[in-house]
Image (cartoon, helix red, strand yellow):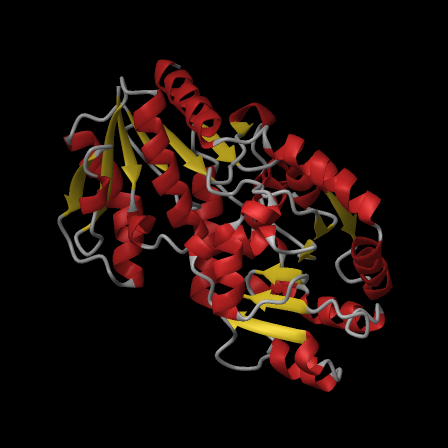
Length: 379
């Protein structure tokens, strides 16, 4: 069976969609070698590092503009797939073709542009999102990352539940516990970045739904700076201080937190496992996530998490964390105090998180995706 995969995001491994397509293709090649994987991408997207797992087919047109991207997704992708005798098209992000001569599987990670007003963008972005939403209703199968996202898709896109399938994502194998006394990576990272012996950690973006402002307010309210437990914040800091992406450095200064908050900036993927392992708790009070990979990475390292309730994060962390309303500063401060002072709670959550994280693997993700291909193509 030949599967044509839209590989537009292959060249963007720092994005969620880029990570997803790369992990999926590599593990599909391992668990389902009978599938012939064909990556279709614009000419400006390099697919050289995909060779060995799949073969590459360029779209023979300049598609580095918004109009070109739309033409590639809606017209060229089905045309190229049919020309190369594919049996099925998989679009691993929210942009399936409206009409296709071949069956279509689409992965919709979340419906943020439809559900959150601040993320709807301008007129062109809203029109593109509306087009993608309507096109998704024509797909033979919609894959999504969590039960929470599946509910949103069924309700908002008005598609039959039997056409929506939950296939969880996973953390890489490098995210695993290491005894503190044997953790040379953590010792080296602590020395290189100037990390304290114990700290709370946030790692992610700074747009409003992440609720970093509320996290800083809760940290101040919990008085943890006085107890010598700093807050370490990682992630690419905003280029400008705006209502959509408030600069956490300004907020920390206004709260008088001083050196109690350490900003790391961008964190390399190779540094993340040790960074998680060194934290007393991982804090991720996001209001909405389609899946939320960082909390899973944290609990897979044995670090308990504090997450925002109301979307997929409670599914992701399971018994490995505490869930609080992301806009409730008092509840968040209480969760921080509990993580800081209750060693028995942390030990229980750490053990529960490791057991829960073991349920997720990219091998399982690939096997379930391959089974969905067979069902759709056979049907």
